[in-house]
Amino acid sequence: MSIEIRPADRADLPRVLRLLGERHPEDPPMPAAETARLWSEIAAQDGRTLLVAQDGSGELLGTVDCVVMADLGRGGRPCLVLENLVVAEAHRRRGVGRLLLAAVRGLGEREGCHRIRFLAAEDAYVHAFYRSCGFTPGEGGGFSLHL
Image (cartoon, rainbow, N blue to C red; front, side):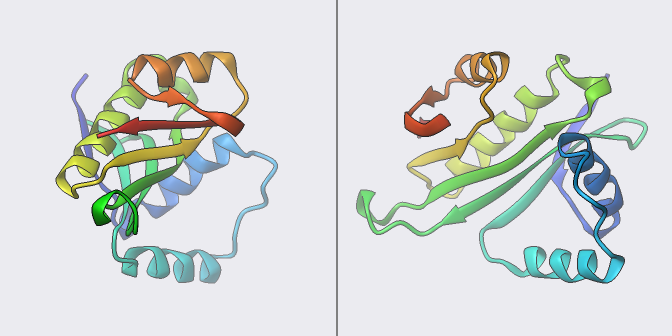
């Protein structure tokens, strides 16, 4: 199966919301106006990239939200923070998450980041996955990768 990792666009929004809904099914759906407002805000933020994994048929298999932020430490090199790494349940354990994290790493390297960091759910399998992708666990459920 061919998988493309690319920045999301406005047309992807309904499918991204479905993926995020798999992660938190208890969350009520957002009204369309609020969704449109939030998308506009996200799209306008400097350093913000929402990545999606798409197969050859156009199905979205996963997503991750990345923010490259300025950092006064480390000689002024930025840091990349990621949030909402989600792979569709039907496509888990098939390399999609690994491809998304490789794309995150590539983004961080292109932006000159000194580190990627994020918080992870309390789940032994998830923690083993992140470690297998080169991330180091820290205090409080956080993971990081120094670039």
